[in-house]
Image (cartoon, rainbow, N blue to C red; front, side, top):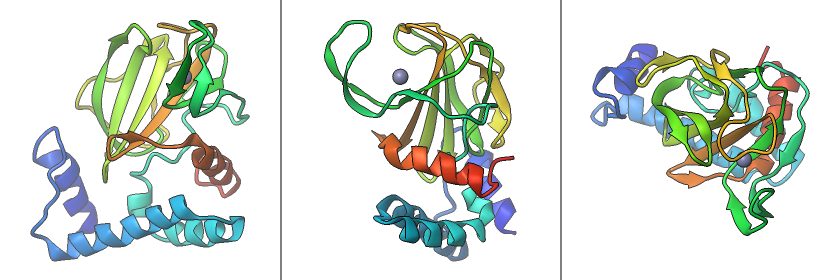
Length: 207
Ligand SMILES: [Zn+2]
C-alpha cells in the first residue's frame, strides 16, 4: 500500500512531484521520514549519527529514495575538491563549489545515488554532459563531466543503477565526477555526505 502510494505520488501524476496531500497516512509517513533526514543532517556527534542512521535503515522504503548512496561503481573515495568556497582550478577565481569532485578514471560507471526519475540530461559549458535526478522529498542529485549518458528524461531509476560513464567534458581539468546534492533547491554541504558515503559503505547500504 505504502509502496503504491509513493510510486503513484512520485511518478504517476506528472513529471513533477505531486504528493498525495490528502492521504493522512502517507503524510504521516513522510513527516516521520523527514524527521529522520533532518536529524541525520543535524547530527553533531558520531553517536547521534549512528543512532539516527539505524532508525533510517529500519525504514528502508523511503531511505532508498534519498540520494545517500555512493554514486560510483568504485569503492575508494578520493575527493579532489570539496563543497564550498574555493579557488577554481581553471579560472583561479574565488567561487562557490556546489558539490564535490570525486577522482575516478574516465569511463567509470556512474550510479544513481537514490531512487527517483531523470529530471534532466544535457550539456552545460561548466558541467559538461550532466544528469539530474529528482528523488522526491525535495532532494535532487546532479552528476557532471560525464563521457556518456545512458538515461533519458523522465526515466525512472533505482539506486545503484548505472546512469552513465564518468568523463572530463565541460569545464574540467581531468577525469572526475562532479556530484552535487540539493535539498529544497539549495546545495547541501558535502561534508555530511562524505560521511554518509563512508557510513553507507561500511553499513552495507550500498553493495
Ligand atoms: Zn565539481
